[in-house]
Length: 109
Image (cartoon, rainbow, N blue to C red; front, top):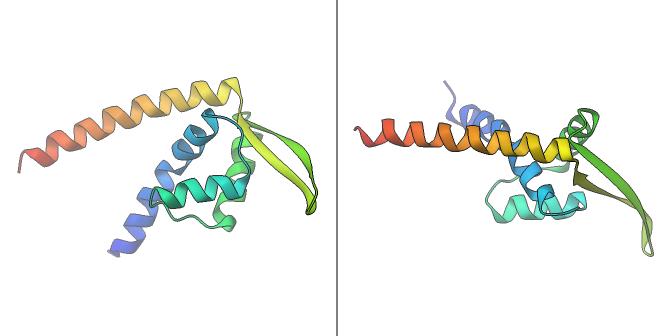
């Protein structure tokens, strides 16, 4: 078993929650999302982020708006919908319960 593959799968599994949590605070441009993820030690590349944003949008969890830019093409700013905020809240509860269960198991060493 390859530990790097396992680590990558663990990060991917929580990435949706992290993105929805970032957008729950307000709208963001994808590079801002990448920056916040990187600052939190979750290194994600654009090739991973954009398909995920598109999937979340198609699921009704995100919406976006276009804003004209003075230094290039228009920019797409994403934000969580009400459904996205509710979904994120459910995911947070699940994460908290899962984290607590894992911590209990790990402390029994």
